[in-house]
Amino acid sequence: MRFDSARLLAISAAALAIPLAAAVAAPPTASAAPISGPVHRAPAGGFEELMVPSSMGPVKVQVQWAKRGGGSALYLLDGMAARDDRNAWSFETNALQQFGDDDVTLVMPVGGQSSFYTDWASASNTNGQKYTYRWETFLTKELPDFLAGYGVSRTNNAVVGLSMSGGAALMLAAFHRDQFKFAGTFSGALNISAPGMREAVRVAVLRWGAYNIDAMAAPWSPAWLRMDPFVFAPQLKNLPMYISAGSALPGPDDRPASVAQVFDTGVSMGIEAVALVNTRSFQARLNSLGIPATFDFPASGIHTWKYWEAELWKARPAILAALNA
Image 1 (cartoon, rainbow, N blue to C red):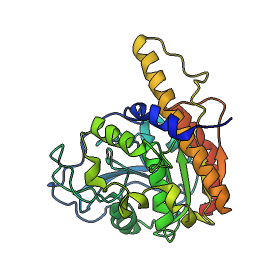
Image 2: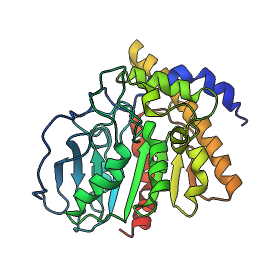
Image 3: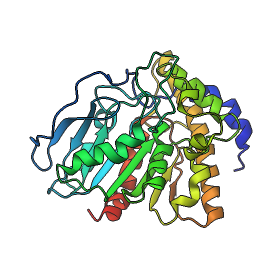
Image 4: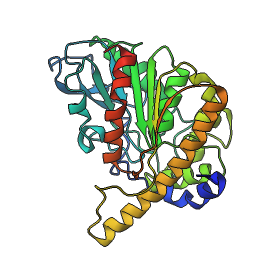
């Protein structure tokens, strides 16, 4: 099949503005008092919610500890509408059960709505944000430093993202190779400098939290290009990767039973069509650079959590192998 990427991206830009990755939530409160040092209450294999000090204020992090107390960790990043109470991987999927018997700690940061998990240039001025997003700093310095107090390795981690966080997972791994040994992306925006994509992202971050994309990074500035997997692709050489996107066609589990569900299914199909074009384009980019990666393009799959749950299960053997877990 041939893809007219520019045209489909432009046509589908509006669809990208309504990602169904999670429910809407407010950002963390920056003025809250920092939480003091770690107190490890849960046993190996147990579940715990931590409050981690950061430059953004305390950030909740949900953790399922490695079954046998090992130091490896898998960071699971949330979607565009990340909530401030729970990471959607913890309740929209069976990720906890998938890795329940493995010697790897699941690290699920809470919050980051519309952030793309990067360090922003300034606080958003369209929604009264009181602090500047510093998610890359949090995920690569503040959080691993904090988790080191529990015996979690700073250098033997994997990162997986979906939708908004799909490109972020690759970005974190590309620029922090000392920390991440594997990256996975499901239905990600992997070519954000393509025609129509910046404005699609602009509409999306306005829709989910009224954020101003110009506070994230100026158009096609070094900061913006640093977020674009298509641009930094050469830095992914020798990194184990699992990359997927659905066909944008509903599968057996997609049975809308109301007008609202029919609408949601249609939106999910449109968003996944954008993700598919982005992912096919990124596949061609890696091929041109001679960089191998595992790609998966299921015959059915729209922009929904059950699809990403299935992809995580497919990626699990490669994750465990990369971490020697």
